[in-house]
Image 1 (cartoon, rainbow, N blue to C red):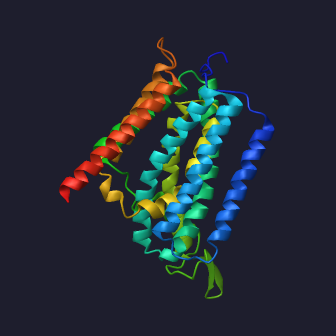
Image 2 (cartoon, rainbow, N blue to C red):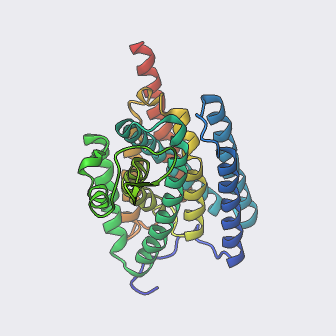
Image 3 (cartoon, one colour):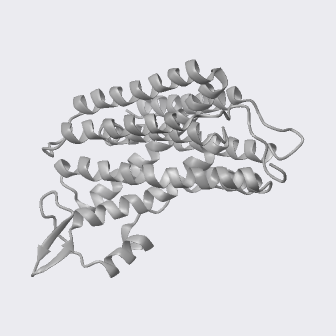
Length: 317
């Protein structure tokens, strides 16, 4: 489009029925998850690992379907985006652990909060994906601005670490408490309850709002990073969706192991800076960097960061 960003090689025409089919698959997977955890039982490590395997297998199988149906280039873009979103989800796990500890959420209710948190995360990411892709398509300078944002985000992550997640300082949480009558107690697994003759939000709903408000920050970062790989809304959405769907199981697998990944944020910072640089270079004579290079940078950065973290943890022990 004149004045816009040129379409990258991984962008492909996807029929409307494919979007519908993906929507049905996601809805079925969410329904199965609800039925499997409707009794609010505490998720153990073994169960979390099993479900993580299911979600990862679903994401990989879909990627193979992309390879068969759309070709190698779109498949590499999908796997790059999937791996990037999966890696960035580790930051979400860290934040979820802090919020659950802050609000003292009973272990049996955490899966329900995460389930609805994931539903909200999918909705916000879908909105950001279409908005971001439209901006990149229509405005030539949007890629430079978005790229600079990613470079700054990567630098901030490397130098300052995790963003502040104090719920008392979160504007959305404070606004929610000001507007919606709340009760600072849990009423089983209910998000609302009747107290003193009126309907109020329980502490469980306040926790969900805090998680959603915090996740918006991560959604902007992750969507921008994947749009640096491909502007195909279908590939960005499916890579994001399949990675986010396994976020709940990932939390129960990693919540107690995060201290062993001391250098992971540096690997993520490198990936974000590279993604931002890729967007900026696309608006220069250098042009689009190949998708396989992005996948290589993502894999090598994460492997190096995780490897360094494991070695350091073992030496400390």
